[in-house]
Length: 319
Length: 300
Image (cartoon, rainbow over the protein chains, first blue to last red):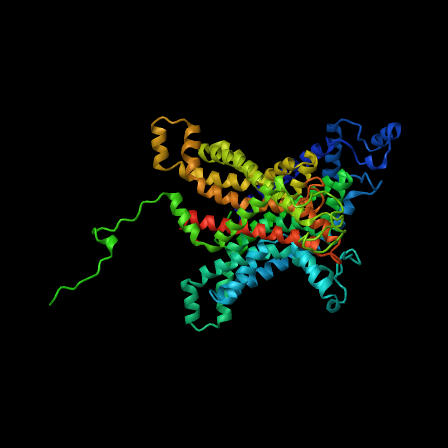
């Protein structure tokens, strides 16, 4: 498992991730600072007052100098600067708090994705070519083609409005979170809407790979020696069927992270994604760059974690 | 013992059984036709393209005209899908939205094919350090949250449907490049490439005259799966209010606006949502059908 090769591989990947994050965030920095207009446009300050404001935030200096300062602060002091719109608001603590909120939503969605996806896939494979299989396969094809905001819309419509008497109005739109973090009820719809399309992909893959595995000789042997069917399916079937499924975990994490931007905006969840969209609309560029850098680092690390997880799940894979 | 008479079907009477000679494309078409879902999907998509073309010249009402209906009006005979929050006719806006989705979906894939094929061919054929650099760039792009990068790019580029296409293509070209690279890597070892080289063909002739046509099947399949992804991206962007500039409607922005009225006029959000989902579903079915038709050996 943790061989020297793995360590070398991991460190190479970490270098690549760092390079990616730096490259992407500097591109975004340069691109965004070249945009016409600035964060103070909406305040209608003009002339000397505007000059003063720009000077205060150092926005009148050459781009390279600004970038140098930004990068130094970000790298060595973990300081992403201040918000332009909410004067004096430090970005780092803000973003870290929002990251934890997004992690709550994304983590729940990931549980939905993997749990539901595996369950549907295994059931469809075990009942291959019955109506159960056809139903589940159709559901997963439809689920894969339904954008998360459509799923969210229909969930809100059914449970929040048509069944309002049953759910007691708990799912009214817009749902505001009562606290920083959502309760299980508040989380359920966003997490399901976010996870369902990816659960469909997992279900398709699990089904295909289960069918492959269940045909193997060692499964027949396991049955022949009188193991209970459940043990055969889970211990001999599912564990081996999971290996191909793990290969899509990387893209899956990216999908959930980017999908959360839309879901958080719909459900007014105070996470990174909502902040990202609002900052873009408000021209609060320091936050945009900070959040994007955070996302890039997170996606890189998640991908790396998935790749390392392969070696744990499948000892045949070595780096 | 009498002779056993065996009825010989007429076409076998000649002695040997000869299968009708068919080209690769005819053969693929024959397999494709047998896939009913893919066939239904292509009929739907043909209709959709028809609607989008008609919408260039004619929509029942102006897509941007306010107060054609009462605000939030439900379905009537004159307005089959009702009106939106500003009293604009939803079916007219839906037709223009189909245009936007198709332009973005197809336009993105044209750009992705242009970039991905060239990059992939060069990397796969020349290998060595060129391949190393290209593969590194591809890997870097894979590690970036694509939708967010597209969002930022679109903001930097400025509003307009062309810029949406560029922004989405910039984050979605890698699948195509990787596929073509793989094709080039395997095809370059084949005898007919060696023959072309021996007869003095220049690299660009080998790349575009031999390797590219031979990887056309997988490229078409990949592009077909790329279209719904691009449409989905555009829908996400416009849903967030960062898409095609108003008053031009897109299914995403219609759904986004409609969501605000979900409690009392749910049809405004439901209609574009269903149009979007069905279209994405159709493209995915079409992609599945094409994949099976072009590569019958591939396991599902």
